[in-house]
Image 1 (cartoon, rainbow over the protein chains, first blue to last red):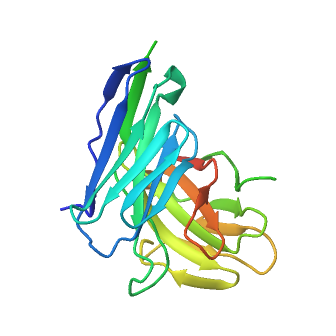
Image 2: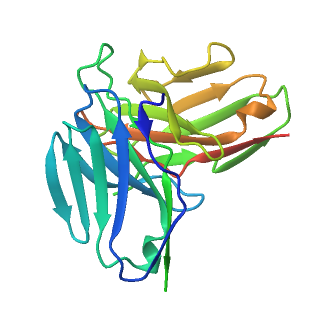
Length: 115
Length: 112
């Protein structure tokens, strides 16, 4: 079983739709959670960074963490064609045995927003 | 405010040659991480370095791969005697003491 599970999609939605992207994880020690956006043949771009459970909003993006269910989500409101990309969840255990902050990534979900 | 720099962006090597990938972290960042992305897979951690120290190399293959982050200059990921299975995108990320990691554009290695 992978430490972080993410449906690879692809997910196709019409412009203006609300998009919901999700990841589940197995390691209860994860405390920092991130969402990255990666355009084709580019480097990952940090979108959201959250600590522990709760919600965090930034413009059209909302990140949600439910540690009791080991489940994180990213919501995109009023989706635009420019949001078409692969979205990667990532998480880390800052107090692990090596205490290195290395990120564990999901496989990524490919999103296409159609005009 | 330059981001993480990586070069070359594309690298082609024949089997058995050496590949050297360079990463310059963001200004003020002293932590460097290397990740590898194989086709249709997510990013996999390889190694974490601070200046002149390897902190965690638990994701590095045991042979042919090495990394350094000297006191002066960029971090280097070195792959000796490359094989076709090494073909991938290699990303470098940097951070301060906290956990926000910022990624470079990557080096796409193709082994012929």
